[in-house]
Length: 274
Picture 1 (cartoon, helix red, strand yellow):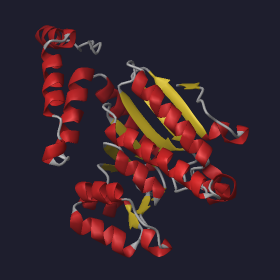
Picture 2 (cartoon, rainbow, N blue to C red; picture 1 turned 135 degrees about the horizontal axis):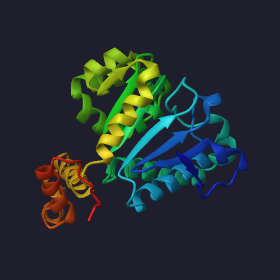
Picture 3 (tube, rainbow, N blue to C red; picture 1 turned 60 degrees about the vertical axis):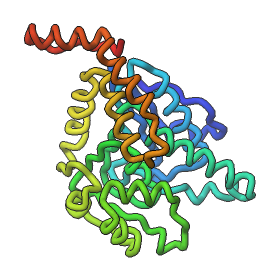
Picture 4 (cartoon, rainbow, N blue to C red; picture 1 turned 90 degrees about the horizontal axis):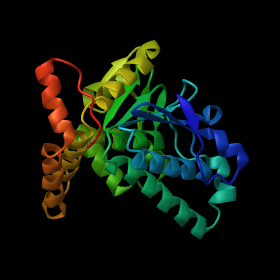
């Protein structure tokens, strides 16, 4: 994979702490702050925001993988060491919160499939990033937890809602009421992750999923994700016109013709997203 530059970095020391890579239809955003268990500084959040725009705008990218560097942690919460510089005033706090919310909304609302590749600790803010993704695959050594109750923090409604959608209200209460850590196996049984594999198999497993998804019809992927995103909305907020428009676009596409031809010719289809 070839790294790409990410814009909007104020602090040069933060430049390499978000890595954006692409390999064919697969993009990868890597949180690269292993000395602090991939804690997220304001500049890192700005870089993630910019990297997500690249994913959204690049039609050749069909699936996004989010992960953390170092092998000890996926993503932890905010980098507290940066608070004095970047979050010392109400205005700075509000600006950070707005960007953070925008980043989470971009990941969760993206019309391209997303995969969280989790190795090690997935705690607090890291769990939030994982929950944003459509698919979560972790190593056997991973641990999960949301310790808001141990810190006196208010946890966002959207985050609680997302957790409840994924694991159900009962397990959401267990996770949030206790603030405890849970093993990878416990997370799997709760439905928090989709697959648990040995650490040495994690990247190959994730990339196999990503490449499989990336080889599928982009317009169909987009329509499916749009439908599912609308299913979990309140009925009054659903955009059924957009759902129907995307389904119609699939049937009118060149990819639909290619898919039928490839099936009849018993070959792998070459989809173009058109």
